[in-house]
Image (tube, rainbow, N blue to C red; front, side, top):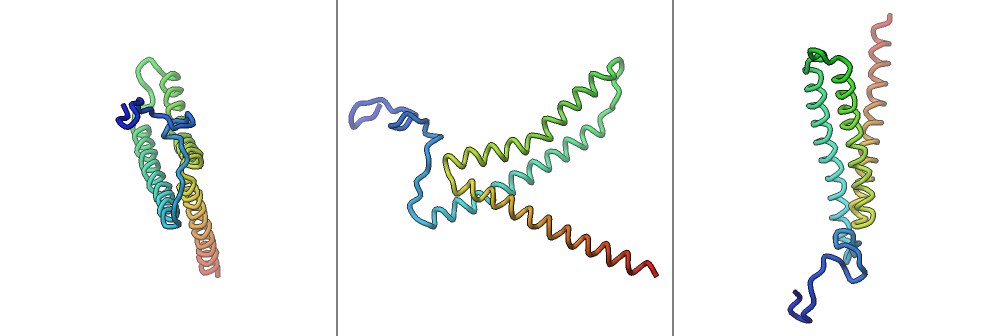
Length: 143
């Protein structure tokens, strides 16, 4: 109960939306910058953790025996479905978080999208470096 006007405290705002779905009003630019960099950090930390989990799961599935006594196709079908769910989980989690933060804290969503752009730029630069290295190595050994 609210002691000021004796009304019950509701988990909803005055317009009826749940509090976890209310849009954050930014007061100053420093708050926007902080949320932006939080979004970049969330993107990288989340994807590193998800990648490590997928690698661990992959190694676990590779080390598991493929043929159980009496079950040949049921276990392989179950393993395929299990792997598919965990392969799609990072996409669902990332896109879901970006959509959620776009409605609640827009600067975190922009930071997550910028994190994706940063990762893409790093991968493209590494790809160019690797291609140049391949051509340099092949041309040095071909006389």
